[in-house]
Image (cartoon, rainbow, N blue to C red; front, side):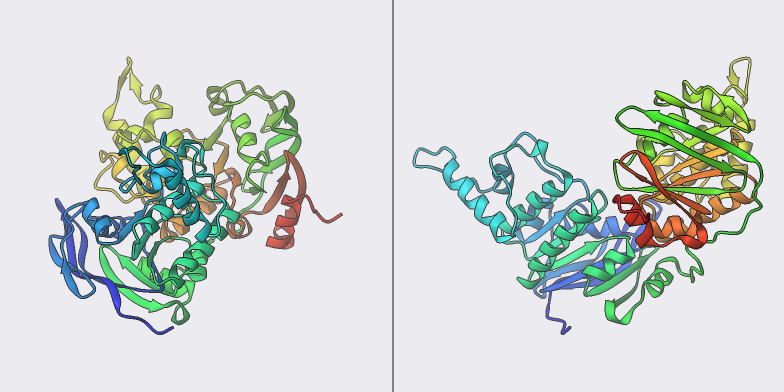
Length: 500
């Protein structure tokens, strides 16, 4: 692909926050009619770069250029006025206003008496969405729209002011496969109209599907910019992490022992029914299925968050009554939830305080926490799981996504569990941290832990699980041994077309 003249350039941009140098002499050029992917591990500087383009931050040194002329952005409004639009992972819209009002919020058409010309407003909005090939009601509040549809409103808003540069920050994070396909189709449309698109993402398959060029940041520095045709995903990962990731799925063969968890006929009305399986010590059993198939709901029942309507659970051969998470923990069952921010961590607490939460009583004397024991415990687990931090007193809110996930796992390991339920354990973490989490899972299986791995990423299940059970509409539709696994067989079962 012939590269056109850059619309927007960063030239030698640096940005520091206190002692942290978030960007170091970064140069990047965005050209018309091109999708330019920006990748890097968490903490590489992607978010800082996006905020500079959005006018939120100003560079400490270096400059921005628009059509070759130096550009100073004095705020987000200034960025928009110069044709730079940013679509964040969580859309920034007015939830109680109509779709059309959000699209034209800064240029509402007025009638002869000065009021809003609603007919004209709705007509303009409908034409804009039609140009994108989208049938979207424009007279409904944004509040009721899905994340995917809210992103389309943001794109329409950008087009309404004739944005020449569109920055899309992790736009697929909360989208289904179908919604991602629709977003990509619209992104290609915008590229073909001459818009310069910066696509910030950490999923290699998406980057290599949508992008024309890729730029890699590592530790705040620009590493490489190249055409996707000149790179492989493995090359890109190596540039991101500064080393060759030999295996994203470093699973080792663990000796399989006694049955640690046995589930028979487990049922929760309207959610899942007659679910039966067993997990042995040293074994990783994967749960696959489409969203809504019942995977997370089974884990929630096993951890005592929700109650079953029928069925039996046994731990190490003994019948288990699980009416609460306290019961589950006492039996040796722990649960790492998908949303670590909402359910896994107290973000304002330190690493040490988070790790000690489930065992506060064990570390207390006369109702007073023994801070020395807490610190020593947290230090041990931080070293074991290779948590990167300034110290165990650091707030977890300041850690990268991968390191936060390690703290969640460490918290539950401190309880010395028998069964570990992992729900999307690498969701939202970068590629390097993903390999590290997989290493931890493999090591825990080697230590004799029984692991249930819930994942929507089929390569993850195929790379890490000894067996995979596939759920379809709340029932186990199929089960595959490691040597029988293929993405096609898993998806066939997940969609109700299991081999007979």
